[in-house]
Image 1 (cartoon, rainbow, N blue to C red):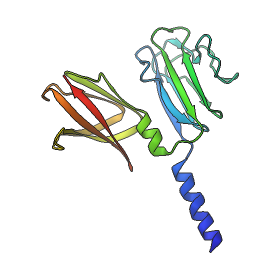
Image 2 (cartoon, rainbow, N blue to C red):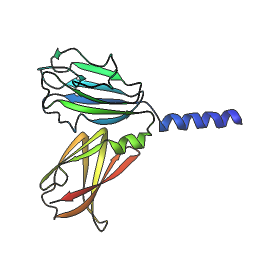
Image 3 (cartoon, rainbow, N blue to C red):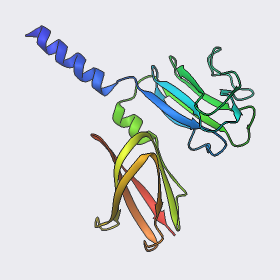
Length: 195
């Protein structure tokens, strides 16, 4: 009986704190918000070149938390990749030295995060407050979203577009809304201000 209980506890623990691999499209259209994440030790990030121009992934100048072996060579060509598995907690500012003003981000690596915590901490809306258009970004591929007004009435819903979804919200009246994002068994609700 003790062995069965131990196996169940280990299996549940593995599901709650599973190491994961995340992908980042890496080109000049990548914003700082698109390239900034909170992940767990043991997680891997893969940067994929999304255009034919030269890029790299390196610690920002003066960055002291980055592991010594973190950073890629400058590579040219769509589909080139660089991946790194983070083993220690840190906050790492990084960039592309070829395009340092618009290809940059921050990685926050925490010792232990549940999958739900990773999901919640890696959803961003831009802009917020928003007037006509809204981009939802998630480190996880999300399937659906629902928008609720301040009274809890659903006013919109839709299908997610992977890790990025652009919405036209011009039809919503000014006010406070709540956007529920769903990915498999994960869900998070974020407050949205509509101008």
